[in-house]
Length: 198
Image (cartoon, rainbow, N blue to C red; front, side, top):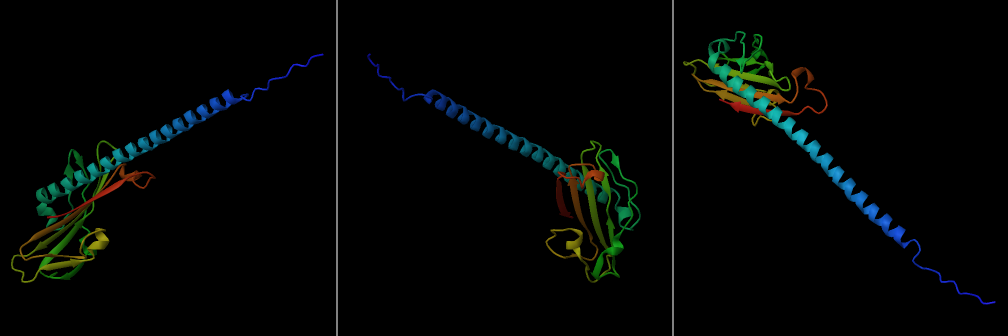
């Protein structure tokens, strides 16, 4: 009887191994692309919300400047003031200036503070406006100096502000949010702040 030698094929499973390697690489590349796409989507949503918050802060600042000019008579005597900007109105806002610390010149001038909030008509943005108005008499000899501004306007460069005799000095700080005022503390709401002295 003759025995036939068996040829053993050393390449068994090689095609399966190559196939699995290729599938593994394709899945890895696909997962990396999906992860990158999700990060880009999250970044674009965050960027949009940041622009909305900045637009709300900018609109609030323009409203504060406009109100300071148009309602200067009521602001400079400390009576309640209504902000009417971009087809949005607030209910009359009262003066809360008594909480501001007057360091010097208080007998020759007055300090008034108004803090309205505005939900813009698009309903996905809100502005918190903080106006501090200093009014000095023309016949004053020393400037009016107030302090504690870093607690009113976080990030303010100096803790004090002075207003010379005869001057009308104003600081307006506005926080814009990417949500309604009632929802500004919700997770994911962005806030941008603008500060202006005029």
